[in-house]
Structure formats: C-alpha cells, structure tokens
Image (cartoon, rainbow, N blue to C red; front, side):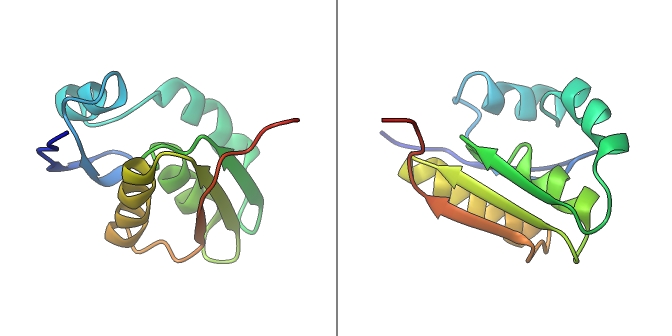
Length: 111
C-alpha cells in the first residue's frame, strides 16, 4: 500500500499523517486535530510529572498531547501494533520534541 503522507500543524502539535487513513487521517487533514473532547477532559486531570499509558496509540493523536500535558518530568508509554502507525508515532513525538514519549511496537491484550 502506498502512503502519501502530509505534515500539518494544529492545536495539538505537528503531525505527519496519512490523509487516506480513516478516521484519524481525515480528521487531521480537514480539522488539524483528533478527538478534542477527550483531550479537554484529560487536560484538567493530568498534571506535570504524571505517567500515562496509551494502548492502541496509532500515530500519536493522544500520546503527543498527553506528552505535552505531563511535561518533561512526566512519561507517556505508547503501544501500537501496526508497524507503519508505530513509525508515524515515533516521527510525531520527534516532530514535537517530546522525549517523554516511549513508544513500543507491540500488541497488548489479555490471554
């Protein structure tokens, strides 16, 4: 599958994304953000220095804003099973200069 990637700056940061990936790629492409409602709920809960686990992190649509919310003293552990999405997750963490995001190419679940 050929990926035609785009780069866009939105309220949640800078994202490298595939506009053909539905629904997150479409949301990034047309609105420059993804699921702002959840992030509005998370923002007053998360504090500097907190630790967040993002399972099914995709391209970092939550991990990047979470990394910004918890700051350099906080940690975000991000797990993504799809290789290409995991690569974009790492790229998006780097584009936003978030060294507090630790991404893992792994599938999590209960046996």
